[in-house]
Length: 261
Image 1 (tube, one colour):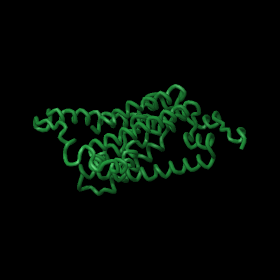
Image 2: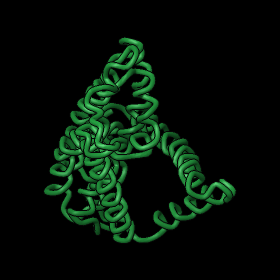
Image 3: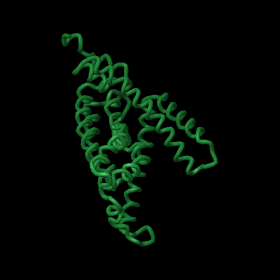
Image 4: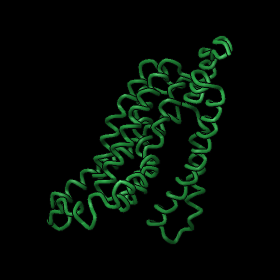
């Protein structure tokens, strides 16, 4: 196959997109994407199965891997901002079948993730409203997600900005509360210290096998970071904003690790 046959017309693809995402939109999409359902709902399972040390090390290793991946994706997105993102890159630089498989696997990935998020939303809301049927919350959040994807790109960017800001604020509050509990300011003035790191088999409960076992849960926690690569095709100036926002993922990684410790 010749280079002429595999060449992707970037300008033609870019003209079909509405480049209305600003720098602040991309920043919050990158940060908010890494603070997902897995961090709030499933992080407790990682600590339970692998211990606090095993969970922390698993998050550190997976987070480091995702950081390098996002840096590479940021470079490609800045060089060739198209709507297909990594699916298009796979077709152009590897093989068309590879890009085809990436695209459909990514669609299946998010189809399953949406269902997981709806169930998680139902569980969280049932804690506050135990008498309400769970399916109502799932239907409500499904309608909200449909509405946010139906509106314009600019409206979607604004929604992502404010919702991500809420998640970042929540994580910061969790960190502050955690520090206060460890230092003894909360919990009746009794300092928790490093007591949880010495309970039972902690800090590495289950050994190396447990760390490998929770790797899928940890990876799910970082799902959504790749959205910055997809959004680059609809940013006003992807050459200046997309790569910078992906590189700043290191700060998001540190924030996620701090929230667990």
